[in-house]
Image (cartoon, rainbow, N blue to C red):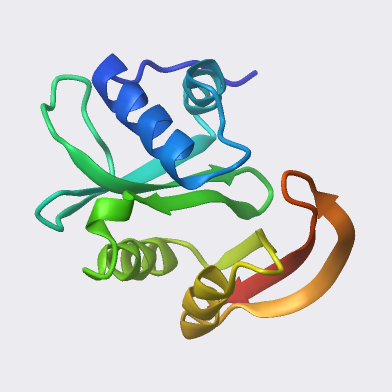
Length: 151
């Protein structure tokens, strides 16, 4: 049995806001809350001044520029990485990936085949394509590239 934990409502609101801004298949506030409520799901946040925070406390008052959501079950799965459009081209995704790839040994992820900036970021951090799921995404239609990284 996995225990549930509480994440600050303000942080959940910010993640949901960034989701809507960045993804055509944005997760709802409820989906984010439910996902992060389990102790096997985690996130990193980068603040507006570029500081990466691994464990955001419920009482912290921070404004986030981006986040990584990931699961830690049998394997680490990178579920989401996003940076506010107004905060892009400032190295925030790199800062989060540096911390993230330092804390885990083996990571798997899926990415839209047409998301060249994300694929470039993943390649930079040693991810390799291992499979393709044809017509996996909708809105817009796209294949999913499955990538993996080992330390």
